[in-house]
Length: 259
Image (cartoon, rainbow, N blue to C red; front, side):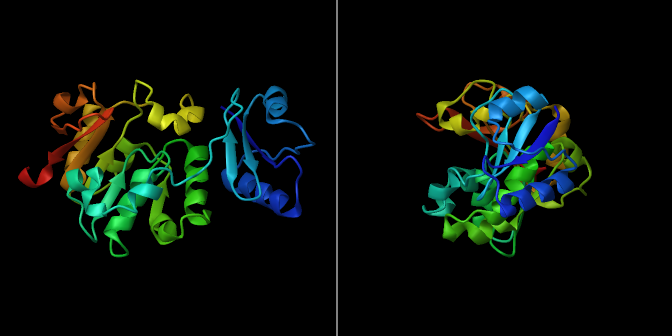
């Protein structure tokens, strides 16, 4: 799908410069706003619209009136609790200084939690295959002004625009500690409604044998899957399911230390 970038409804020198910069970095057309609504831009350009607003980038897939924009989401409250008790940290056996690869970056909530936990000696990489979504999240991680306690953790997350299985295939064996995968649920979960704007745009690839095989090859410690509680992927791909009562998703892990 074609994407164009424009300014906020009433452009300023700042937002115009921002839109020009985005256009150059992503190699997408810059179109003047001319006080057109997003709906009008969709109609006339027949394209997704990326808006360079004053404080953030807003992405409107064709036909959608609500934007996708970066926000720390659940990481904002998860990181105010004891991190060693976070389900992802517990299941993955993540430790300070570890290398964590998030194959399904999304809103980057899990990557931020991991970054906060592994600290400055660790490393967190997040994969997003869609170039516009990857850019919006990458920029948001660097520029978000809220949640001061997360600024450094957000800035440490490295965003890679790539298909997860392809990215893993290019890594040396036993080169990271934890590989995490959270494929888009085939069933809608209300708690994830902030992601609904881009449900049709985001990568909907489901788990595959190649993906899991590559993850097991590169992970020194664990491969972790988050999926809907009805998912059969846990058993199909050898994950030990961690049942979470009264929740709509479960975690599962493959212990790579045992081969």
